Image (tube, rainbow, N blue to C red; front, side, top):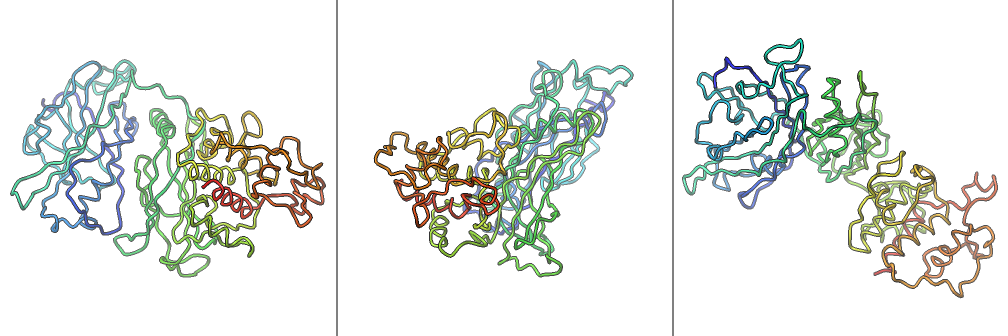
Length: 526
């Protein structure tokens, strides 16, 4: 169709990672994962336009990047890459045709948004807007014809979109083409179509966000920027709740959800990090490592203990108040299992580290410090998953208002821990010895529910009267199997009962003591 018809502006922002390590693919891929994290919203306040956001398979990006894949060794060259966005209006048909499966074909002007190598090809009715997938700031605009006209809003013009009474459906797929020197043929690798995104009247109704879910990050890798400066790349999957919150905020023309990063070098303290990728739907992200830290000390990237964390934030707008998620879990590179520990604990701490029983939240920590409820929940879940050889499932919906930590929700789901009230967990509250014994006891029962948990014949502790009634069974059982030991006089020291004891930290469980209990339990359950 011709450009005199009503225009619809569609901008696709592909939020794509840049990888850092040289890699040689052993084989040419045969398929890609479907694009993910589809989102939609009004473009820059224009009532006649919308934006589609999506992420791309990291393996595709690795394959097209000559710094990561040796194309010559694979006998290929002239690599191109394409994003195809298909659409339909209300109950109409998709615009896809089989011609889309072959890049050698010409496309109908209004049949597809076709993108390839970073330039604008114009002057014909097959006008195409094309771009490089590795670019992180992309605009594609084209007239899609009168079929996309959805009515005129009151006070608007002929280009306005009546989203209240109509629905667009979008799906996205990606294609890579390359010249195969061995066969002399142009080859194509297509991904499946993404899930369908409904936008408008029949789109999923989004609730006004009042919180943002805590992110989970993983797989830290040290690499380098183009100028040789170091960076850390890692994986972060955006939770659906955050995607929905972002969609709602965009729909209200009130901005968008952002991402904040912090970095900690050699335990010098958390500082704001320069981010190489902050877009929500980018699943691979990076932060730059500064050349110096702590007032001028030089960073030795191969030796420095570096931690990274991130969170989501929204500054607020006319319809939504400012929001901020909890910080993510901490990922580390060049990580010591601990930075400080008692001499008597180091052998068993090393055994715990060797068995993978120290959770990320405690890696590199001062093990002599008291352990919190959040830290112990993560420790218990890791023990459960290692010993039971299965993954726990977080409780859903989340009963707590003061945490979204998925490991805590797993611990609650398998009965390892309870809340401090019906709606609060109190993740930062410290744990005493009898609470520690009870949580570990419940972890063992979750791992081996048919075990023998009799405490018949187990003698009372000399300080038995100070043990809470609800903790007697667990403390005696844990003592029976040698997991928890008392002092030289046999006292269990379950908790502090006086202000003097509280001030001295009497009866509190330390991180190293909790980890030692975990590794002893693991050895018992082998």
